[in-house]
Amino acid sequence: MIPAITGSATAASGARARILLPFVDDSTLFFVQRMRAVLADRGHELVTGWVTNDSDLSYRQMTAVLPNGPDVLLHTDAFRQAAPLAEFDAIVTSRMFAALRDMSRMPHVRYGANRPAVIAFQGGLEFDPERGFANRHAADAVFVVPKGDIGRYRKHAETADTGPQYLGFGHPTFLAPGAPPADLAERRDVYFFAQAISPPTKRARLHLLRMLAAIARADPDRTVWLKLRHLPHENTGHLHREEYPYPALMKEMGDLPGNLKLTADPMDAVLTRAAVGITCTSTAAVDLVRAGVPALVYLDYVESYLDPLVPPMRRLFGESGLVADTAEVLRLQAKTPDPAWTETLFCPAERLAEQVEEAIGAFRARPVAVGRMIPPPDQVQAKG
Image (cartoon, rainbow, N blue to C red; front, side, top):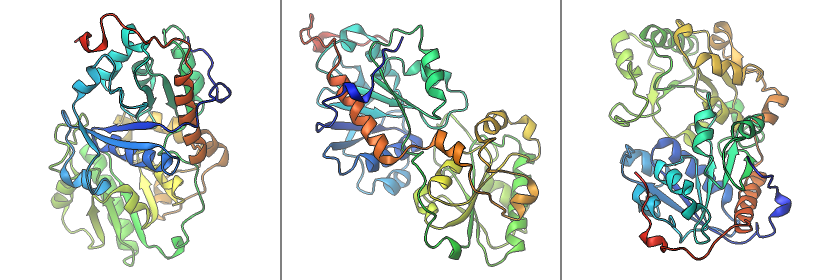
């Protein structure tokens, strides 16, 4: 059961904090990049940490976001201390590392005074969030999106012994949209945002490539970019392995227009150039909306019935106004996002930062924080 914790209970929320922002792959690296921007200029010390073991990040991927690398290198064994990384006031993460989760479940750690707050965000817009919910029961604060999932999380945690837990709404990827870019009318680049495992079939991917080729041929003055999540030699150990890479399919097709090109540029760089974005089951649609760039969510591709991500994508984006049919995609006929839908998904950056500070304040004011441990923390070992 989650005891109610609100901002009114957090008198210490404005105090300066030393905050660790750990990352291990491209998704968590993007989270760190955006979370750091949200918390910048608020008086906190923000420390980026690369969890190097089990990491498939390439030098290119890391330096595209952190040109000078991370502030610290971490091994997951650091999370196995009885007082994990006690030099920090908070660990803000979108990945509930197994070692951190397991240690946080131990009463000898959970109720000890000398440890950081564990503030766990969802990995992103999750199609099936219950597993992520369970992994975050041991966190001191949990942030969910969309807003309707707050009630869903509360119900899921009813039988969990979470203790005091701050429950917030928001994610640094889902910040309230601003005005459209000033140069949007002059932009010509069209981007399709590829996913590793969706669509899952070769026929579906060839269908999408033919559509992109048709868009490129119809308007030679535009450049149509297929935005890869990573290069073929990167992320080879990632959970989501790509079976039919687009670069190989493009070579197989041949005779493609010269203005249909590949890129693996970082998302933030792409958003400064895109005139319109197309996606299937990628939540890149959220990035586009946040940046004020027109977005088309296309779910009617060949063999879409074989893609398990299509039904949840329809559920999440069905009321957005962004779902487009084949003709609308070929004409690049984007629509304005529905305001009621955006309200359920996007949080203003200032309010998100305030909530993180409230969560740290609530942790500092928690009723049970025992300073004496027998045996002392350095003699306690994590299980497993």
